[in-house]
Image (cartoon, rainbow over all chains, first blue to last red; front, side):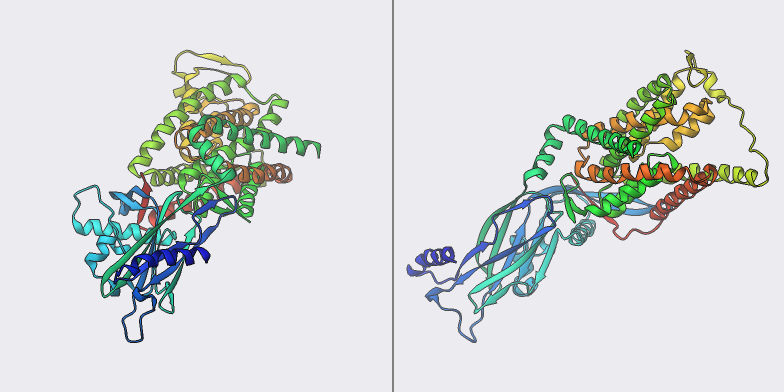
Length: 256
Length: 304
C-alpha cells in the first residue's frame, strides 16, 4: 500500500499543473506467475486508484467513471478448422488461419462494455471478445470469417483461455477499483499485458498498462526446455525410464 | 493430487492417471498385449491432446513389454533373427509413420485418421478373434479337441525372393515378408501409439506360418524396439512425449501387468481371448460412434 501511496503522490504531480482529466494508478498482484508441479491455475488481482482532478471523488449526481481491465497473452498464429459431416463421418473440412489470435484474453468491467463504448472505440482498443483483431490470413467472405472467429472464441472460452466478466470490477467510493482474473492451468507461457481503461461518457479517458510474465519454473521448466532443445537425449531418457520401470517390476514380481 | 504435465501443458489428477495405467496394465498382463490401443483413446477422453496421447502411450507399451521379453528369452521363446528383421522393418515404418503423422497434422486430418484406423483395424481383428474364440469354446463344450491348424505360410509369402532360414521359427522364407510386416506395424505404432501385437501375432501365425512357441516372444521383442523407436521419433519430431505423463502411466501399468499375468493363469485361454475380442470391439464401437455423432464442438484450434 505504501507503494500505491507513493505512486498516488507521483501521479498527482501533473494534476497540480492543471490537468482536468482523471488519471489511473494501476497495479497487478503478481508480476510473475510460476508454473510448478501442482499448478492448477492462478488468480490475478488487478487493482488501483482513479485519481480525479482536485483529489476528490465525483459528487452524487455527477456521472461516475467506469473501469475496464483487459489481460492479454502473447499472440499466436492459429488455424481454426470446422468439422462437417462428409460420407457419414464428422471430419475437418474448412479451415481459416488467423495471424494474431491472443493466446489468452480476459476482460472485466464495472458495467457491460457495450453500454460503455461504441463499436468503433471497442475495435480500436480491442475491448471485448467480439472486438478482437485476429487478422485472418485469407480473403474468405466476411460471413465465413465471422463464423470461424465466433468458433475460436467459443472454444477458448470453454477452455477458460478467453473470458469476459461484465460487472466484475468493483469500484469502492468511486476511487479504488479491483478485479479478479482467473488464469487457467492451460495458459501458455510468455509475456502478458494487463491494461486498465478509464471510461466516461463513451470515451476512453486514460489507459495504463502493466506487464507480467508467466513461465514454467523448476522441474517443469527443465523438462520443457530439455524436450525442446535436447530432444534426442530427452527421448533416450524416456525410453530408459520405460525399460527400467518395466524390467524393475518384473524383477520385483519374480522375487515376491 | 494435481500434477502439471510440462509438455501436455495441463494439470491432471495423478491418481487417475496411475489407475488408468494400472487398469491397462492389468489387461495387458492378462491378455499378453501392450495395451496401447486402450491408453491412447482413454487419454484423449481425459482431455490430453491426441498427439501427446499417441506419443506418450508408445513409451508405456515399451515398459509393459520389457518383463515379457525377459521371460520369453529365459525359456528360449524369441527368434532373434526373425525379431531383428521385424525390427528393421519397424524402424523404417516408424520413420514413415512420423512423416505421415506430421503431414496429417498439417492438413488437420490426424484425429479423423486415428479414429478411422482404430475402427477398421480393431473392428476387423475383434470380429475375427471373437469368432475364433467362440468356435474353440464351442468345440471345448462338445468334448472334441479343436482341430489343429495346419501350419503353412501364405502363398504370397512364398513368391518373394532371397529366401533365408529362420531356425527358431521353423521357416525358410524371404526376409522381405517380415520386413514389410514390421514396417506396417511401425507405421501404426507411430500413428496410434500402439504396440501392434494384435496385428503382428495373427500375421505371424497365419501369414508367415511361424512356430507357435516363438510367436508371442518374438512379437514382444519387435514391439519393445519399435515402440522405443516411435518414442524417439516423436521426441525428436513432434516433441510431444510427456515424461511426467509417461512415468505416471508406467508406474501403474508395470504393476498392473504383473497382477494381470497371475490372474491370467487361473482363466481358460479361450475365455480370455473372447474377453479381449469383446473389449477390442467395444473400443472400436466407441470410436465409430465418435466419428458419426455430431461433436459438441464443431471447431478446433491448432496453434501454428
